[in-house]
Image 1 (spheres, rainbow, N blue to C red):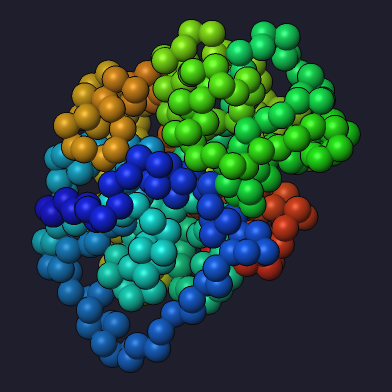
Image 2 (image 1 turned 180 degrees about the vertical axis):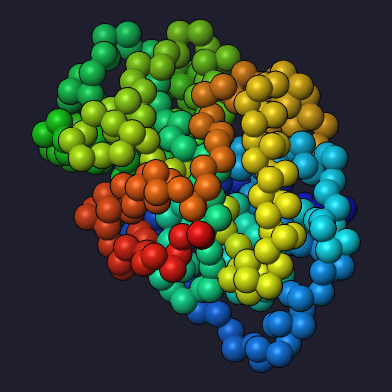
Length: 351
């Protein structure tokens, strides 16, 4: 097994921006970069390449929280039924991951769920295998008087990444309560997650939306920072919404899905087991995270894991498709380009 990182992208701020959908590329505002279509490759070449059972499966993921769920299988390795192994590459920027998929340099990838939909709708031949992470967003504040969404009226709330999934989730919740950003409250998108975390801890700002592990980081640094609103609960209270929403998803190149099903199944089983082990053993998982240098301090990972939404939900389950479509429908209503202009069809979901 090989374990690679892209050393050009070790910045904490950058992987945070990438993994947690803080850039428009992830959730596609008007400024989102176009999704490249799959290059022409001769069928015989593709078939020969993916039918080689002894060749490794290349797994791509972003450094940071997304990689935490993989730590057990990264550490232990995996021998596939066909005799091959798995190789992991952890990258720090979305354009790098997109290039890896387009150039067929990775076979499976863990992506933000809406980016997976954008790539599929943009012509990439991908299959959604599973949802691997669900909602883990919170409103944090040093003001204990905030108890409901409507208490945000008249306030400035800091959010990273205009046109990102956290932005859209927050706006959907605000809309359900009759609050209009710009009129009833101010959303500030000027800082990255690490900057918001540091500013909250230092008392320079009062209220912000943060995902894990940044929510945990802020509260560890300053006990006066409180989690005042759970956005998963607020999301579930909106009529017609699913109980939760996906943040990360595992996709497989269709040729690999079709020609190497036993090897793919073996990895899916190992990944599901790794995710469960991480949830059941946060302290041990945190220690392993620290030893693998994936961009999160081990103690922070250990504290954050219980509220980080790690899960393995097979796309073959109707409930998983319902969960994904619940988010995609909201994103489509708010900004169609965020998922590539349309809802993914049934071909997107693995059977």
